[in-house]
Amino acid sequence: MKDRQISKAVIRRLPRYRRYLKELQKKGIEKISSKDLSKQIGYTASQIRQDLNNFGGFGQQGYGYSVSNLHDEIGSILGLDREYKMAIVGYGRLGQAIASYISNNEPNFHIVGIFDVKQIIQDVEFKDAQIMTCGSLRDFVRNEKVDIAVITVPTAKAQIVADTVVDAGIKGIWNLTAVDLDLPEGIAVENVHMSDSLHALVYYMQGEQ
Amino acid sequence: MKDRQISKAVIRRLPRYRRYLKELQKKGIEKISSKDLSKQIGYTASQIRQDLNNFGGFGQQGYGYSVSNLHDEIGSILGLDREYKMAIVGYGRLGQAIASYISNNEPNFHIVGIFDVKQIIQDVEFKDAQIMTCGSLRDFVRNEKVDIAVITVPTAKAQIVADTVVDAGIKGIWNLTAVDLDLPEGIAVENVHMSDSLHALVYYMQGEQ
Picture (cartoon, each protein chain N blue to C red):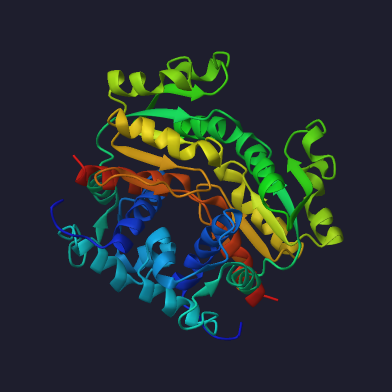
């Protein structure tokens, strides 16, 4: 199933489906039609059926989707049925916010190391994570087989951090800096560019005046 | 020009164009061909020409684009030639990170108010922003004519904050919480859903194993 080429647009919608399904689960809702899911999530029912057909369906005619099955299946497609070791590189306010968010909301992601240019004191909230200076980053990622590096360092340092973790065998980079990274083939990357989002917002605000 | 319907995909690329053009400006580069811009930014040259043609072009055959003109024109299309008043609602780690980011990187956005459920002490970094409890949010947004509310409160409080600022006449909401907001027509919204981005990342990591 994972060998098939699925469009980027579909992949981007899957986490959103899963998020809505989790909300339904919390409310004790066991099944839902594509039509009702459509009302909640905002995509058309036909879009939803088409998206989920990429992965073999899951719905039954006249019954709809089982909320928990669909939630788990999407999780499994995304790879959320595994555990990931994560290192946070850059422990300023954003790094701290991300660390806190992950540890409270993402049970499959384990922060094993936290890195900063300066020696930071042990954060009581992350007692399981080693806190180190960036000089130890390469060896730590290699030795601990860290899966994901979260990069929240200042713009000017982003590429050198990326080069270091790539060299150490990282598989994925979650880039929260303002720049795009130059990465070799075979490294997965997701960017959260705050300013791009803010600038799109103000564009849409013009239409509303 | 702004009356034309421009596809969402184009709009999403504009901040990225502008970001690259700013980098070129910093390096003292005055003009660039769509081909060279393509090499930097990763879109095809034809995609770039097509995107920019939506706004009447700006390029000259055989010369390319003037970096500073194009940067400023895109800024103007996005609405970045104006000033915006911003309120940060939720002043935990993420709220602090965003406030710091905006104040250091976004000269057109002015943080005028910071709100939290608990009384927070005046942040020396944001001496121009009033720091208040959420009870004052509605009146403040209305009286100060705040343009944008940045919502970084816990998930369970996100909708009530949104309702409050909408009622007070907000024009745009930058939503950094994990939920989608139910908003009336005419309010611009941009979501930064951290988990959706992380989950897309792990999907792409599977292909890389």
